[in-house]
Length: 452
Image (tube, rainbow, N blue to C red; front, side, top):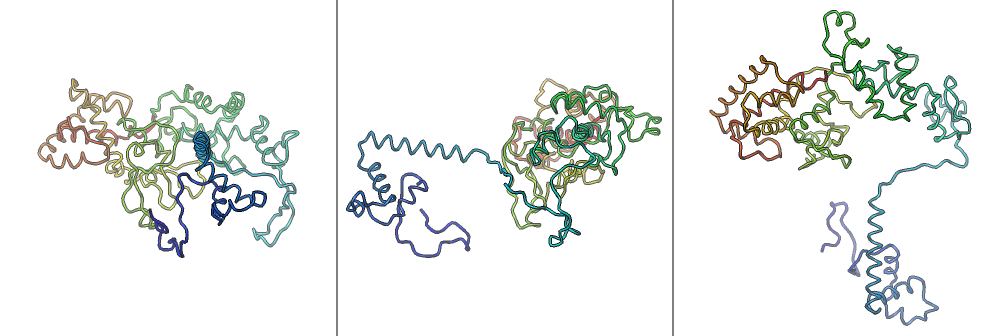
């Protein structure tokens, strides 16, 4: 047992300790207050019952229950204490939500001249822009009324803005390209009637996001071929007229998630705290002096959605693929092409480990030939079989990798040691390294990281 230690130099206990008491259970605030009563049990017993203070009476009652009460009473008392402790633990485990309450007298608010707090101008009150419909009849002029106004069927913006963002998720560009701006500075919709119909369907189905996304992905527009002819590229290079299906690089997090899914590593558990997957060493130390403690086990393979995000040092792998930073709200991500992206796919531990597990997955098809294993890996990554020409190129690459690793088994072992997941010891080292390199090649294909 240590008293007064454990913290940093500025947190150490300073002073003298006169009395140390050890209890079998954690004391409640009421019990702690009783303990703070300085008199001993003998001294309290000498005080007439009518003259005892409340802490004194409680102190002697607790002493009786814990020491002198009949066994069945002591047992019942300990059971009660245990149940109360369980109740406290249950209450502590429940998530809490910060709530706000309206003031009885609303605070006066003014327009500030040039934003200066000491230069108030006209007095203003809560409301909605005059150009838009008023608050619903009977709604309070507060946050609740504003929330009801947002989802009121007569509101012309909320449903349109929402379905436009869903459309952008699947087509890369919204029906209104400026998804962040539906105002006078924004772009006019390319298909206003379609936008209106999707918005009314969204409201009609009870704002069902899943139903709206199903409607979009099962449409003939989305399911058509993404192949672009020279004539279409000349007339509609951005596919704003929807003459073909969308073709665009996957979002940053989806690229990582897909590699994990193809390899069989992805953990699909929903919810839970943030996780810290692989990251180059020293990044946090360089910027903030803090240490990045990498997670282990299943936490390494959770969806990118759960990745811990530090604004001053965001996950570099995701940022290389244009993930939005957290300095500002971003609803329209950009897509760039840089050498860092290829270097990331070829060298990041996440993708190298995924390549190894994908190789193990296809090699366990023991009756399959090399051609069949190659075809399986290709199909898992691209959802189609390779063409004869693609298969020949991949088979030639596999033969080259196999010769290289057979000549240098130490390099094969070093390559296969990357990542925390264990290697399948039953598989030949050189052959596994060759298939892993081939799997890395497949995961690097443009078709693998592109939605088309």
